[in-house]
Image 1 (cartoon, rainbow, N blue to C red):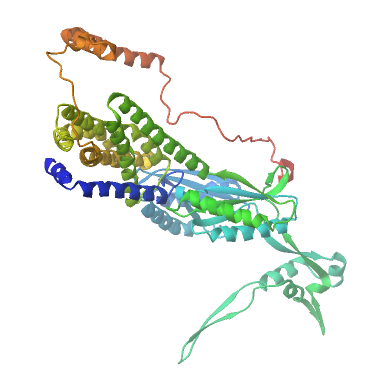
Image 2 (image 1 turned 60 degrees about the vertical axis):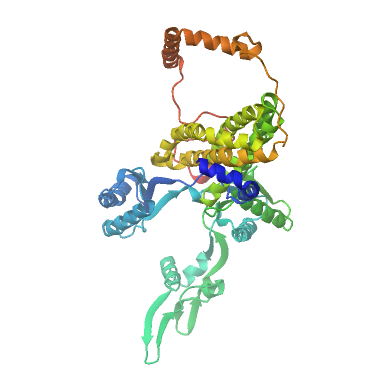
Amino acid sequence: MNAHIAASFSRAKVVVIAFLMILAFGIVSYVSIPKESNPEVSIPMVFVSVSLDGISPEDAVSSLAKPLEAELSAIEGLDTYTSTGYEGSASIQLKFDAGFDAEQAIDDVREAVDRAKVNLPQDANDPEVREINTSLFPIMTLALSGAIPERTLNSIADRLADEIEALPGVLEVDVGGKRDEQVEILIDPVTFATYDLSLSNVMSLITANNKLIAIGALNSGDGRMVLKIPGLIKSVEEILDLPIKVEGSTVVTVRDVATIRSSFVDPQSFARIDGSPSVPLEIKKKSGANIIETVAGVKAVLAAAEGIWPDGLKATIQTDESEQVVDLLGDLQNNVLASILLVVIVILFFLGPRSALLVGLSIPGAFLSGVAALWMSGFTMNLVVLFGLILVVGMLVDGAIVVIEYADKRMAEGADPKLAFKEAASRMAWPIIASTATTLSVFLPLLFWQGMVGQSMRYLPITVLMTLTASLVMALIFIPVLGGVLSPLRKRETAVVEGPVDPRRAGGLMGLYARLLETTITRPKTTLAVLTLALFSIVAGYGTYGHGVIFFPGDEPDVAQVQILARDNLSLDGRD
């Protein structure tokens, strides 16, 4: 280590330029690092659902869930599974062991579902396999509402979703609450009876004419051509021209017995904002995209679209995760600036202006170096990383203060500033390394934290390790060299005090500390007994008056939800 310190002092200009480059690169990293609300975590749960129209909850469990359970229960790494039957469907929740391989688990579940398909009822829909991926959670929910026609509201929502999906940081936009369009055929009963027609015949005729028929391929000596018969109905006119009965030379078409109009499928739920119908848009960002820039782009698209919307239509931002990230970034910046200011004030009071300046430089140097290391390692700036950065701000100056204080002592004794800082870095290298290592050893076991919580919290020890390692380099290399460069060339004049000085006779805090230290040193047994008693008293006091252990502390909720349950099985309109 001494060789590295000596080499850095022999190339002081290179070290100063490197320090300035680190600050510049750290600022670029802080601006460019992707920012998101929560870190991406692999949740060890997979859901399998299958539906069958009209089936009861009891039959759904026996006919749909049981065949799937027989195959899914043999999957390696599966911890527990829970089946639930609903009216018309059944679902199975699979929970895997901590530290599972998400891709392998999904592949195993799909293979098991494919094997179980042969034992499901023939009319059952294909089972659906879904995993919980935190990166696919919406970062922003935007709702369009207003007293405008439903078709207009849906059309505007679709156009807005397409414009938002064109943004580089947006993965997809899910439009919820939108009913699918359909065509209603209104039969004239009198005309229907006159032509002696039945409703089932007309329904089967229209259904049979709305199918895509694949014939196959025609092979010739020159090539291969895929053939098909166009059978899908693409316009209302095609429905009206369908023949439904032939009597001699008379052809009866749908146009003769019915009228057609565009409509929507029956609603399954209602969504309103301030009493007006609404359509929500859930916006999901791409993995690694900057949440702040992505939300800003969405708001820009929204502002441009609002200028051409009809009167009465408004957009409401219901959730915006970027606000929390912006608040935390602001808190981080305020904490860093406040810590630099307070440390400079304290050091200025005790050690002087030169020491205050050097310690003040060590904080942004270590902080920005840690951020640059995180960015180059592919990490994002999320809530856990921000918490880790705020946590270590006060730990970054310990080594620098020790080196600067020793150098000041040597300069007070008449040593040259450069030699004083070089000797301080060399003499204090191993104590500072040992002190930093003890701090890092506390966070090192957190790197091996297993489970879903461990995947989320591992960003904390990584952030602390990178930032404190950067502070160690700052304390032993950059700050001593900067101290030697920035110190005045003339030696500091010192007052010579004849005879030994007794600190116990000093006034203020120094004298009080010296007298207390003498008391504890001269009475080691009493001191040890008091410390032991205090230790057991604290443990006993917490066991008696402690409030227990909780995973997350309680906070004031931002939203409230009211759920109303009825005893009877009400219709949709009745519930509304």
